[in-house]
Amino acid sequence: NLIVAHHPIVFKGLKKLTGKNYVERTVIKAIKNNIALFAIHTNLDHVPTGVNKRIGDLLGIAKPRILRPKEDTLNKLVVFVPSNHVNEVSQALFDAGAGNIGDYDSCSFRTKGMGTFRGGEDSNPFVGVPGSKHEEEEEMISVVVPNHLLGSVVSSLMTVHPYEEPAFDVFPMKNKNPVLGSGMVGDLEAPEAINAFLNRIKTTFNCGSVRHTEPVKDKVQRIAWCGGAGSFLLHDAKLAGADVFITGDFKYHEFFDADGALVIADIGHFESEQFTKELILEFLERNFSTFAIRLSEVNTNPIHYL
Image (cartoon, rainbow, N blue to C red; front, side):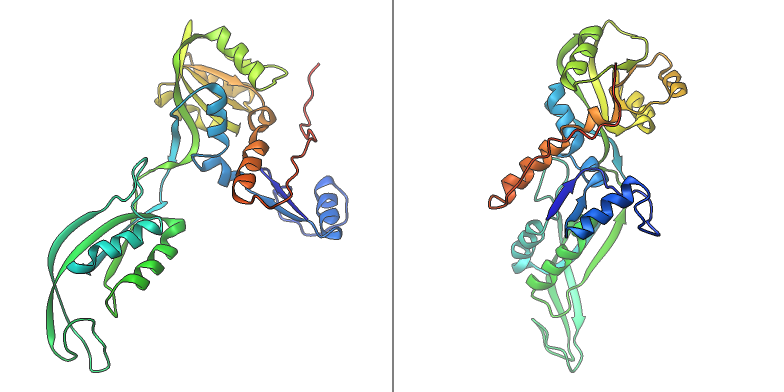
């Protein structure tokens, strides 16, 4: 009663359900049979363990990095804590997902200072007396928090902080998020002859063909890639110093934009994403061991090759 998919069946809004096309027919069939449709398209494209990581594994690239990191996804959370509760509050923030920077976790900055406050007559201060100004040695804790975890991190902060009214600030950051974004880039263990590499990706991804631009080097090592339609990342691939950019759905005139800087290798949209269902299967089996899971064997690629 649940279908988990990479591509959604509905890309545009549906204003009627008459069954006139395959999208409407699919939705009607799902509704009639009480089947939920759950699609995780760009979500799975943008995470470091998703579609592009699986492509990198197949290419033999051990430590890929995001090709175009996303902006406006991070916040700086600053909170002021009495000195004898710093470790407890810090650990609660880390446990909720704060303080992760790239391959590092439990990252924070702390500085000591003096906090002052005066509680009103209805207050119940953790330290001090209502109506009297109080000074308390405190530490400022500063951590990075991604947008999607901000609510849970603040909730954890409010739960564990000893003060009745914790003082904290949230600042949106313009920094790029190194572990979230489009495409990936990385290096092969050793340089590889360009023709051998093109033939290898043709075999690995079961391509009917690989459309590519003229080779500019005899050997290649730095590879950039994007599952699906990734022509929008060509400039990023150039800036990253890639020798080859692998993706799908390049248009004729876009091939000229390689401009002798690298080799564009178009392996096809479906071909670049075909192993995504195995990625989803592994995740479900790892996290929901009691579920009955069936991996679809239907090939939905609409493109065929002679």
